[in-house]
Length: 218
Image (cartoon, rainbow, N blue to C red):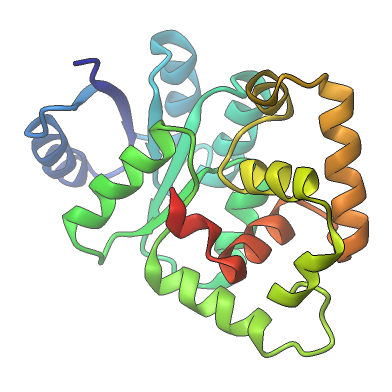
C-alpha cells in the first residue's frame, strides 16, 4: 500500500506532535516532515514533495494563506489542507481562493481530519461540515443568486462534468487527461459554464458544488 506522505505546518510543537501520533498510527499515512512557520513550510514542501501539506493559518514569518498561495503557484500538484481554529467564512474563502483543497477546524474530531486528508490526497475537496453547512445555508438564502440547484439545468452534461471535477480539486490539465480532451477545450467548457451560472472564481464553483451535493460524492 502506498502511504499518503504528509508534511505538518504548525507553529506549536505540541500540536505537531499530537497530529504526528494520530497520522502515523494510520496504515495509509506517514508524516515525512514538519515546519514551524510558513516560510519553512514552503521550503520543506519543495524539498520533500509530500502528497498533502496540513497547513495552519496563524504562523510566524509567513502565514498559512501566503504559504498556500506560494505553494500553489510553485507546486500546483501539491494538495494543501487547512487546519485552523478559524471558522469564519472569510478565512474559508481566502484559503480556497489561494489554492487549498480542504478546510478542517482544529476543534473537530480526529476522524474529520483523517477523512479530509484521504479526500484531498485522492484529488477531492473537503470542507469541515461546520463551515460547509454555513456556506450552503448562506447561498441557499440568496434567492436572487444564480448559484442554485435549479440553475444547473442551463449547463450541458459536459460542462457539469468539468465543473464537478474543478470543485473536487482537479486542475485543467488533469481534467483534460481524464476526459481525453485538450486543455483549451476544458478551459472553454469551464468558462462557458461559469458565465451561464454567474460565477467569477473557484470559490463560486465550490459553493455551487455544495448546493448540488457534489462534494459528498468524493
